[in-house]
Image 1 (tube, one colour):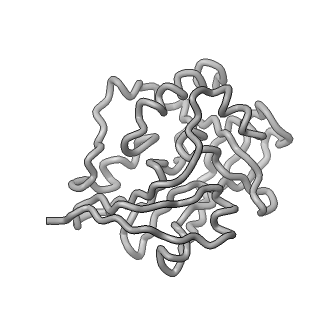
Image 2 (cartoon, rainbow, N blue to C red):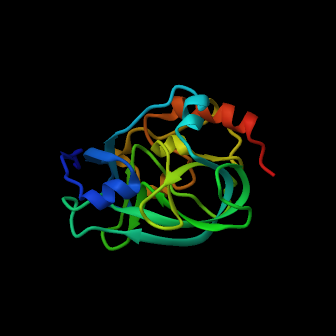
Length: 209
């Protein structure tokens, strides 16, 4: 029987600066068959409402994922937690100095490690897909034309998913789950109600065009 395992990890300075989070520990939560889910915990700010999230986000946009993504993997978890560099096309600028039709890179705190057959997520963040219509809350990174998601799962909302989490059945015990079970979900794990509270306000305020 697989057991959940936890480990404390260190982060190199550049990875922490780019992704914008301090990782604390990780939990392996999956059976051996299929792509395993590896979830990391982080020291990050929890936003009580979207006004607070807006104040901490220099850039707010509606955007589409282009399908182009680079996965950044360390040699081991003692280097840094894997993350993804995903290219998005800006559909509408709500706040900030980007322009409509710009293509920019967004650093996402999740990644698929094909060699290890693992999906790695921080605080339940799930990757953007090409069908999604996203409102993104972003801030600059040290890399040119690159931005990070603010507050992990709190900084990305898919307008194409209309179901309220209260009306859906979610997997929260990942010991017998694989990534196939959660690939189409906006968020994975225990932060569903907080996410939905924020999303209700985001969808109401920022209509998709």
